[in-house]
Length: 513
Image (tube, rainbow, N blue to C red; front, side, top):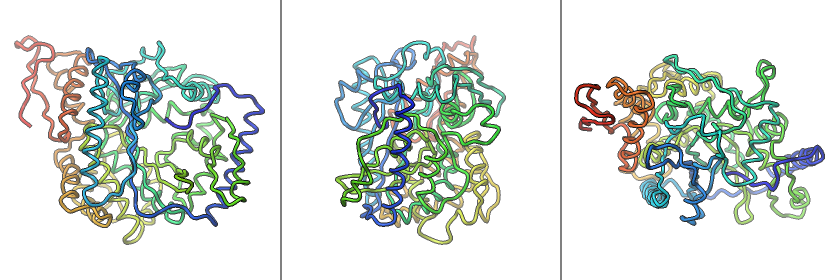
């Protein structure tokens, strides 16, 4: 959800005051990096998972998150931007022993509770990057979640841009979306899994660089967002959709290569301060509500400042790997927040994605020559974009191996690296094998959430269904399989009889898995 604010309109004086407070917080943060003790006892992993609510009948977005959350009454769940979005927060835990299995069990139980609450309101919970039934017409009606922050964010993005938002996305097969929106409504279509890694100030650049280098690999095997507004676009359409719906730049500023607010980066870093300083100097404040904290005074008195103003501003710069400063029980800590993955398809798939990420991250930060010293940042950026466009069929350029299919790179070269990293973290051998075999299975079958969605939709279209009916039929299968919690690469693709051959709409003769 992010940090709440109390108003959606801000005066020039408030903006000036907030800018001063943010720069003061930045100076304070620099002093803390030089002399403060940051909390770091052992490697901790944390997750946030954004989810959707859809109607039981018709599978369209269900605008009832407030009712569902009120019934659940659990602190681990909260609202997100759209009334059909909810977010689940997972308490931090070490990635050791059988913790990955425990995480899967905890997530499955939490999702079942959410599903039970949703069914009481004629809805289902969907873990997917973008709902296939999402249509632009949804945003003609009240769609924004309750909460001042969401209204303020919508108003501020539009005010900063000076006009509404142009969506222009073309997929690899030539289908495209070109539409204009006077709210950030389509932004709410993006639901993700955010992976957190707690680190020391000294280690932060090492971990951020590694997370950035492997982001393309994550998307290649984890893409799950191939459709928007009924069109087949990128394998991970969430990436360009989120980028464009948070882009406050005019056409002229884009031509001048001014940074977008959803940002991969431009270079490897040497300090976490580099990122916070760039955020402050390059991005105007969207939610300029100054806190009452005097961070400098708190630090001078021997206390630990919240740095509330810097945190609020940082929360409106959506780097795909974002720096996080926070405090817990009066002790400051730092995290790398990895934001590249979509939600879904299943709990076991999401835990496997997490194991793959944390395993590679550990290996690339603790053994051998750092990976980013062997590859250019521009290659990492190209890998990221190619994976977002083509998903499981993407190619990646990798040091010592050149350019090769992502599935071969991962299955034949990098799964063993991830296994070594997870072993270093203390995850048991059989647990490592179980979850990394899910990633290997996707690579061998050349199937992830996005490719499965496309294959099933095309099967229904080949049988004579319209795109809309085909997407609805596919999404129904998706939700059922997701609740069964079997890895997506094992899901069958229905064999559908052609229209006029005796089949009915949505009738299937499913092939065995």
